[in-house]
Length: 314
Image (tube, rainbow, N blue to C red):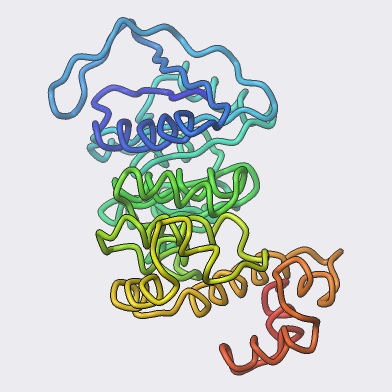
């Protein structure tokens, strides 16, 4: 994974995603992050010197390139905003097949390199109209946290770079691992404008009861596993009645209700896989059978799993 640093880079654009990836690495994700620039040293927009730095190597096909946003002033017509070295390297990385992910104003570097033509993209709200004018072939989106079109990913204002990073981690390592990273960093998991603003794996976790947190972790590890209230209570040295009371007090749910919500969330994820039947999904998620799964799903969402599945696949 390569971070390409540009002059006057905004520190949060750089440090936010880097911290998220590093936390994921701490929890076992095999990330190797390096930081590069086409100058031996640069100064951030906030005045912090960064260096020494070396030019970036060309990425491999499955590498990720992150372009943190710099402080920008709109250029005069006909003048490039970045050096030819930067733009040529981005073009080469794109041809190789690497994924290019910009944070905030970093999208302008992709635009200058001609890589946003025909692509859905976004950037900081203050740059949206400028982007539409300067890159008329780009499909610039307003009101979204981040977008992906092929191997081009762009994020909106500053902190949304962390949202984008969590989304990338979730695609590779799943929602439970990503929720663990987010909880450690005290972040919400926010997706793009077409998704819920928070992961169910982080819902009901704002309390401070360590025993209830431990039981929630246990349920979330294997939501489809059949377990008894007594087994869960023994984990935290409480009676079944004591656990039920504490769980309800701190989450507003019973352990069974919490497990059912996680099972439905797991089912939602599995329904994106066309190779799985509803019977197979029901079995993986711990429902008695497909009929039980259909009934619970309809009670919760007001529609059948089959209808919901068609919506997910469009």
